[in-house]
Image (cartoon, rainbow, N blue to C red):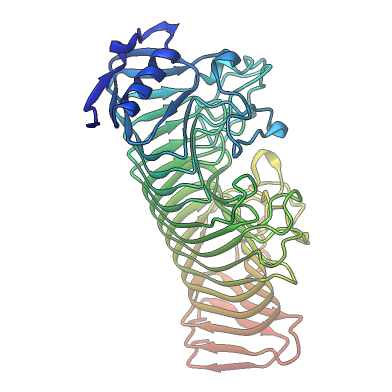
Length: 520
């Protein structure tokens, strides 16, 4: 049978009056389009109150400008929790397995147009009793309380092939907004995703065990993580990596993590984020292998690269293996290049003694640190294991006393790395960069000093083996640029071609320094 060109939902009884439940009419149009061999389901101007609709293969749901699919508040209008085997109910997050739009094992399926899908999240949350909802994502003061129930992921593509979601606005999801699990060949482009910052678990775009995915030209302001890459294979029942994902030209804001990489026991590999602006966010990038003891060993994260990123956050990033992470989990071959960052807290990069992070590279960074917390709990000692949730120093909570704290690393490189400190720093700041238990630390073309004039060093290394400092510059006002202590037997320190004329003391070490071509 020849494919139908366009079917209008109004011709199948949909009213779009904002009151009538149009679920059956919308589904009837989708079914008729599928039975005719495929085509476009046209949703014209209007507000269509609906429960769950199921998209089919070879169909395009096209929302005209001014068309709104609005989620029903009633549980009976949505799918059952056991709608298919891969559906998951996160009871600990007080959410059901209901969804507004589902595509399950469909091929060549898309959502397009200038219209809107609105989950109606305010219908599922109690009104705040002590505050007005905040429009500021970085500084919001708490989540809305959930009433008796709420739907799960608003738009859910599961085990689909050749997926496209383009140009639509996805608003007010009561939980995650757009979820892709076990899909291949996905194009996400030009979306506007907005949830109030008080939305609990209000993720933007979640990409889980998917392959060959592009995300471009999106604006995401989410109540939780804005964009995530996940490797959670448990519900799929098969081993399927999250791989070959490119995210580019996006603007992100989040009261949690703008970008999150991790979750599950699977594999995340061969992915790139480029040309990203992160603003009004708590944490810019969070990469963690093992978030929870509910998974045996954690994800394997490899060949994931970030470039051309501008961010204004409380905490720039964290890269953490996590407590209990074990092989085959691990983080290796990751890079962060061409970053321009303004933040108020330093960041942590840490493996475990049994599972160090391997081959991580930072290049061409301008890091400007300002303010900070007055909570100095971590100044004298940074605890191990370190919290996977980081220490952004917000709401008077503690923060790291240095721009970077790296521990249990093999093959760590910082190149063209510049740190600048504002004048209004809090007492929390102590050292510039701190590294512990590192093998193969290459510091090239650094430009920094310690945070304040009263104490600390620009670079402090403890139990580090094979350290090189090359072509670096001690900024004016540096006391001691490099301090090396607790060195293991056979440790090597090479200092070549550095300009230390701005330092009171170039280096203080407990092992011999092999040096040449330095200005002291």
